[in-house]
Each structure stands twice: as C-alpha cells, then as structure tokens.
Length: 285
Image 1 (cartoon, rainbow, N blue to C red):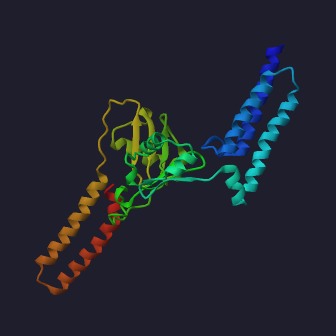
Image 2: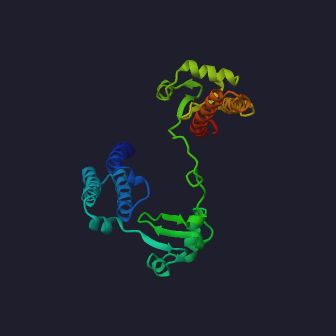
Image 3: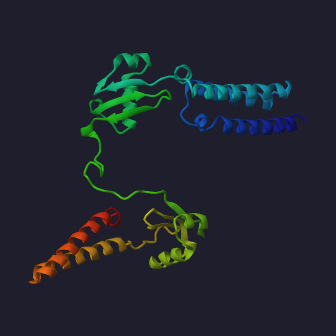
C-alpha cells in the first residue's frame, strides 16, 4: 500500500537527515551563513520529496541528499585553511556604527534601514547609537555591539575587587532523585546532601530541582511553591565571627602595655586582615 511505502520512506529520510545534520555539526542549527542557509533548506526539501514522491527512485533522492551534505562538508574543511574562501562562502562582517556614528554607506550596502538598525540595538538593550563605540553586522546576520567605555556596566575588575573563580553548578537532585555523578563531581556525598536538606527542613521527595554551586551552596526548588525556605546565613555568620576576631586582636593590642605582646597582636591582626581579604569574595556572596 502507498501509505506504508510513504511511512518507510519517511522514516528512512528522517534517519538520514539526522545523521547528516550530526555530521555537518552544530553550526547547521545555529546562526547560519548564506551557504549553510541554502544547504539547510535544500536538505529539508529533498527529505520531503523522497518521503512522498513514491513514483521516483528512492536511491536517487538518497544520492542527492549525500551530495548536498558532503559538498558543504568538504567546502567547510577547505575554508578552514583559506581566509579568501571563507570570505566568499561565509561572507564578512560589515561595520554599522563606529565611534557613535552610523555608517550610512554600509547600511545601504547591506540594505539595512535605520529602523532595523535601531531595532537590533534595542535587542542589545542599547537605545542611543551615540553610546556605541563599535557595532558590526556579522556574516550570520547578528549585530555585535560594543559600548563606549563610559557606558559599559561596572564590573568587579573596574572597582578593583577580587572575586573568587566560578565553576559550573551541578544538578544534584532532579525530580526528587539524588544524582550521584554530579554530586561526586562537586566533591560531595549523599550524606552531606541529606544534612543540608535537614537544615532547611525539607525532604528529598519534595525537591523538584537541587543544584550546588562551586562554593558548595545548595539551592533547591520545591514542588510546593508556597513553602518558604529559610535563608542560609552560615557564610555571613562566619564572616562576622572572623571580623569579631580581628576586632578583638586589635583591642588586645591597644589594651596591653607589654611591647612584645602589642607587637604580636598587631602582627596577628595584619595576618588576619590578609586572610579576610582572600575570603571576602566567597563569604560575601
């Protein structure tokens, strides 16, 4: 029957299209260049034709699919070693704004209107072109924007603040089940996890999602969204305790009349201040 033949041909086309897309890589499903755009459309059309056009030879469609997949793959391997070919097949970026001034000639070249440029800027949370130091329309069609120094958001580096390194958070509980591998990756164990849950009065069964950050802090999202969780103040308490120790050492140094003791307290205070400076990025999160 025809419908059985269409089902079989369609399943075969889906399998081939999936395999070919995996071979072509992630670029094929992300921001496409001109050539990748054409390739994606054609592969989809061919898959549709060989699925439903039962009067034509199935293998002819398979050959066409292979050609349209392997030629772009070969060109991609070649263009990796040639800047000139990359420019031909993938295109080049176009400067749209430079030092706050719109490049009108480049807009005309790319058939870009002022309204379209302003729309793309708004998508980047930029509402005034004069705030832009540099904006380029990439070959993929994405507008890349760099703000002027005075308009860029402040960062810890600008303020001279040292921050602790960040690592990927690990999902240690999903749908009420403990994820052993992510937990081990974070250097923790189920016993620690159950202890942390007991501190906030929550059972594993009521946890929809639980993650651990690079500092060992546990975040949980419960099935019961109405339930309020207590705030974890352990780090703040630890920081306050260390600060109190620093103040006590300074007070002892001021109170004593013994020169050697005063010198010892002052030395300890300085050492503790250095350690506080190192711990602040972690304990003040």
